[in-house]
Image (tube, rainbow, N blue to C red; front, side, top):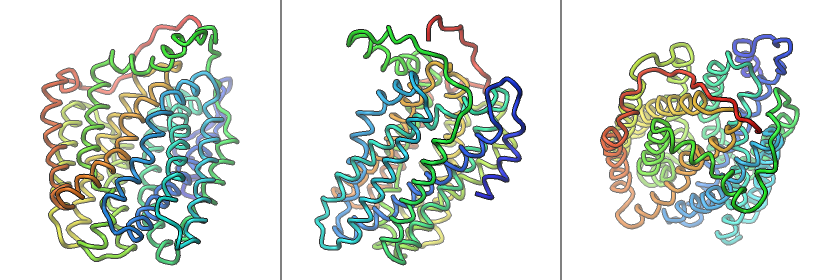
Length: 431
């Protein structure tokens, strides 16, 4: 919490009279994101180690990703629409509370060594549903907590704290699991509870009221839910950035197979797994802190394509490494290059989207990018079971590199994008 307060003094500033913002809201929001992301990533390490040690089969890790992907794919867009016609903080808090319940379920399973492996999967489905609710709401909430002129800085600090969580979460998860799985899941449950209480205390600027008459009839409801998709399709730069990230993570993500590398390739144990999971975040955090002070100024499209290409090449190097130090170094580069892509894409989304569509566009963003990690985990586990772990990761990294080249031809507007500038939107009559 003290780390968050330090960031808060740098980022939040004083409350602006009449703006509907409280200075403390940003600090609470950052604390909530830090706690919840740390818990989620610590829990993912514990689940991966639990499932793989019980099964010994890489495909079991793929089913972990698929069990979370399906509810996220089904619920993400409706949750985004619900966020736009309600209070994002309410959905944010509800999703975090449900993740805490799931952590309690994993704690019960950890205390039952003889429980069948498939007992994990219904809880993973519920966890995916919780994330489908909380993640679009969490993204859509930030612009309502700070004045518009401070939003870019708030996004940068939020990204930096998220990367701090990505560093701390896997390391804490690996260490806690080495001391006992019950401790790992218990830590996650307590963290989700604290994050839920923090999210419920947020206030900030209220969204504009929504004319609920547009929800009359099934066609009206479907049109409103899918409006975020139509908005993204109408903006080629957004569509190109989001779809490129989707394909790169889907093909090039080696995270799901890290338990196999830690145990069978590098022989590093659960602590080594925590280090491997944290390494990309160390590189990403360094880049996030640098970009918070030195944001991209020119040629952002080419910078995005270059970052994805480096991501693919570093993934191939990691796949072929048999030394822990080389694996950690390549994962540092994977994380650093991915952070460049994430920051550019996030800035494009936030600067282009009007208030009335923030929940639905955030849901589209999370559906294409956030769920690609889970679907990529299934793809990686399935491919590894067919051709082997190392060839599967090599092929994925090469696929990410090929996607960067192909997208340069498919989306010339993104290739020519030069500066990050806010978009001007006409006022909507009744939302």
